[in-house]
Image (cartoon, rainbow, N blue to C red; front, side):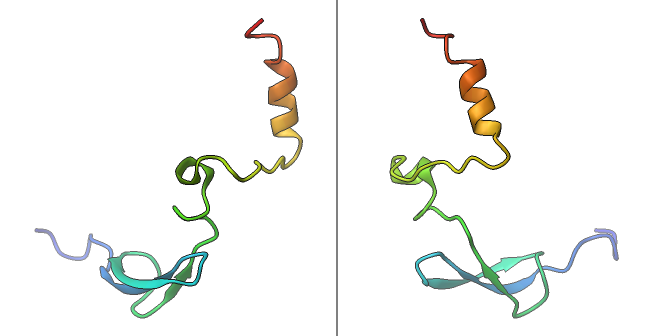
Length: 73
């Protein structure tokens, strides 16, 4: 294996949205850093069954809905 071409692989702490924490190995940050997640399997609609509303940032969701509103008719 060639030297000095691979990123450093070290242990970091990941904090989920509900406050639970776990240690994992990653190339993100540096040894001992903490990654605070904004979205995780406990809060993302893909895993929770879609109970949360999608945020419309910049009107993109509204534009999409209006563009394809008559597609299924």
